[in-house]
Amino acid sequence: MGKILFISERADKIKQYSKIFDKKPFEFLNSCDENSILEIAEINPPDAVIFDSALQSVKHIIKKLKSVTGSTAFILLSQNGIIEPDITKYINAFLTDDMSESLITSTITASLKTKNSLEQLSDTNRNLADSLYRLNVLYSTSSQFAGSLDKEKLVNYMIEGMDKSLSFDLTCTLAFCTEEQPVLILNSLYEISDELLSAIKLRTVLNYKSLFENKKPPFEIDAETLKVIKTVKYPANRFTFTLFRYDNMFAPISLGDNFFGCIEIFKETPFTSDDATCFQTIAQQVSLPLKSATLYQEIKETNLKLEKLERLKSEFISIVSHELRTPLTAIKNSLDILSSKRCGEINDSGVKFLTMAQRNVSRLAGIINDLLDLSKIEAGKMDYHFANMNIHSVIDYVKSSLSVVAKEKGLNLIAEETPDLPEIYADSQRLEQVLTNLVSNAIKFTPEGKTITIRSHIADASQITANDCFKEDLEKLRGKYIVVCVEDQGIGIAEKDLLRAFDKFAQIENSLSRKVGGSGLGLPIAKQLLQAHNGAIWCDSELEKGSRFYFAVPVSEVPSETEKLLTLN
Ligand code: ADP
Image: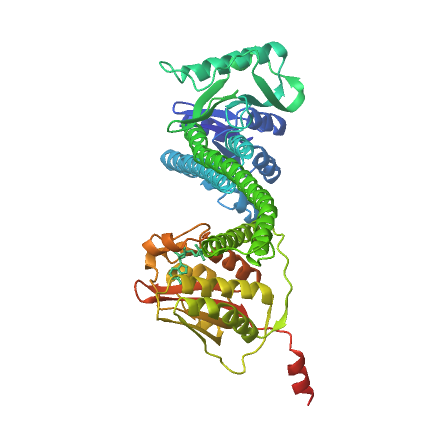
């Protein structure tokens, strides 16, 4: 039940108490010499100490004992029932000289029980604190895992987490994910000799192979050539082969069919079942981010390859277009000379073929110019000349340059002017290019006898609405814009194809678009040009009814010369 140290000089009391406690379940010791009392307390601390208040130095001895014992119960035997007030704070129970044997026994037994309960409570508290600490480590380790897509870092976080929660002597991590070749990462408390290192390498390879008993391992590894990365905490000390007698745990690091490695850890003192759970949890937790990191790396590599291909394609387009342009200019010039009749008269069918050749040459020149523009925009080499300007000048230019073509097709091309529109800050040539493309498309895709209308108005970004597929482009708009709309009564575009019309080389599947032809580059070029203006382009349409193509350009923030003059006046 308990070891009792009795401190008294009174022979009758020593006799009385030894009679009660010098038998099982108690163990009785008596002393009143300060040195031997402290020696007993240090070597084998008593469960209870009974002090005789008759002793001169009682307070002094209690204080000294308190500093060397843990949860020992301190009981005072009061000679006359009087207790000094400043002693009470050190004492757990009291006895008096006139107490009966049964009362003494029950007081001591109760004190010992209290002491045991306190010890259990402090053990539970300690375990609780340990668990809390582990939970904290697991939490911070998993946060580190979640925040990284770097495989090397992930493996290091795993080892750090294990060190903090399990304080190992050595970890051997065979990692298949950090370099081209598998590596053995050793994190050791002490230095490892070459012989011991060879043994560790061999053991690791055998452990690894044991994971694939009946199957072929993902990699062939050879203990002799296995690359090692070693970190030693205290290089002044060395491990010996007794390391292999230490307690150890082993786990694979894998997720489904994805194998990232395995880990073995050694510790001189035995691991608990909580240690095992923590070890397995960390080894499992790291697998998922390692898988994400692998996928991320694959995506990054594929992206790099795609970027390279895209660059090569752009370079190819740009070179080919340049190469085509020179002979095409020569052909065009020759055809112009022929049709000017400077080289002699041409008969009627000659004129017919010459006109056909000229039309196709200018179509080809248009396609080549589109290709060159696109490759310039994509390479960031397009030149822009921004200035304050009025949108009507662009509309007037496009209307007058295309009205002949529209008329030839029996179409009515009109522009509705909105007075007093503020100026925009734009490159007029690029906007003419955009509007020319929209009006040309409207002419191409509208049957004879119908009308094409160009309108413009001012709108706040919040008032601009469009089909959901253009949401991403329109969300970026802020402030005031001049919106230009080209409305036709043509074949229209199905809702599912609205966004696709702006893709490179896209031609919406219908009989007319195949017949009229085109490069499929006009709208993607227009989209890029408007992005360069911090604007947007979109459309709405209904099959067989017609389309409305819109583009928005921000209103200039710099006042025009006329505005400046008006403010001055
Ligand atoms: P293209 O030079 O082939 O016209 P665009 O990029 O200008 O290239 O247009 C892409 C496709 O969008 C066209 O081939 C056509 O299918 C469709 N499209 C463009 N404008 C209209 C329109 N006004 N009406 C119907 N379809 C159109």
